[in-house]
Length: 475
Ligand SMILES: Cc1ncc(COP(=O)(O)O)c(C=O)c1O
Image 1 (cartoon, rainbow, N blue to C red):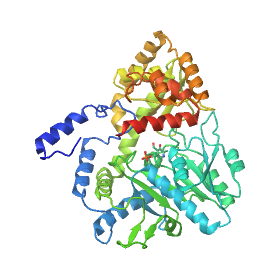
Image 2 (image 1 turned 180 degrees about the vertical axis):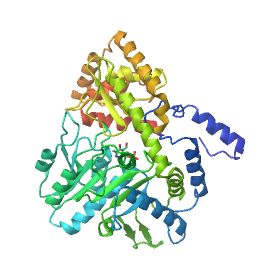
Image 3 (image 1 turned 90 degrees about the vertical axis):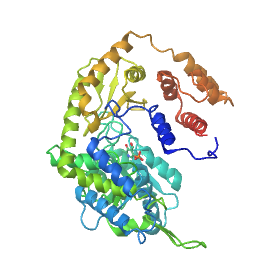
Image 4 (image 1 turned 45 degrees about the vertical axis):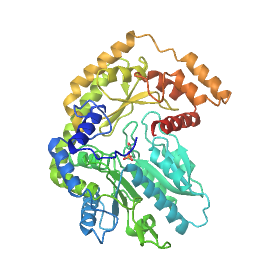
């Protein structure tokens, strides 16, 4: 494809874009439990307009665009105050949970270089339920991840395992509020006390829960402590583009004080070009996300968020009760907010995911891991509230359909896959893709077989397979 010699008309461009969009999964009708957080049309429109108002302004230089700085500072302070931070707590707006976590980990590494200079090979300790972004950060910044198990009943991190995992090289302990997979909050006060005991930093990943849990607490729900009120917590990440219902990309990374945040900021003066000062990873960045987040937070107000959170919690409770009432399905642990996962000793859940997809519902399969069986994850947001009964009906129909379907014959394929892996077949990825019916990088309509084979692969092979797949996907 070439840039067209003659530009297209406005009408042609939008005809194309709107048609292209129609191939995507439909989130608008409330049957998708991921990717898009829908605060309702009015707030969505406010965010969109505010974003467009600042689309071309550049957050790179706060002296050139002081209004972008002001919007960012206002947004960050609103989140700090919601999470009960004092005037010493500081933060920045980032492009998402991943960037917030990357920055918190980089800050920990650079803090340790100054405060623990004897450490040559720094380690960060996290539970297996913590998000991938910590692994990515360790990979990017040359740190070792020490993984600890979770309690297989509550799915919360195992504090004693964490304690045992601390070595003289440890710099950072990580907890989640909540962890994505089963939606449970880790024991943050105990974790932060452990960090203090060993003079370590302690990051709370409240990317998912920071805003929702804070409003749940205001509504009188019993919310485990996770925020700035917990002594020993040194940094927190909280996403605005998830349960803050702000346009993407927007998250906040916060630090106990500016002393610590200093390690986040990067400057460069050693080139012939302009002096560079970057508080976050990006350099040039649109003012749109800051303006949009400012607009949505101000438009909804605390009362608006409480209404959303109350409705979402009420819907989640009905969904959890409905799932538990279906024989053969069981919700895992006791979810602390509006994320939950259910497992089954009766149905092939990968087939259930496909049966739901056929009916227009997007739910997420999660693979079996030691201590946690295969399960389906649901994140309920405001856009899903209107569909509780239909969801339960579709799930009932789906499990009924799967119960009379012949089981998928994966054993011969898994045996063939193992043979290919053992023989280190140079065509492993092409052959594995063919085994599950993938053609020219296109996924089959039903994903159960693909998921079964992926689940059966050792982690390392699975990672390589996914890299190959994405390497083909983007041209
Ligand atoms: C607990 C948790 N932390 C961090 C992230 C990363 O967020 P993002 O996708 O905005 O980078 C996620 C994403 O789902 C998450 O669930």
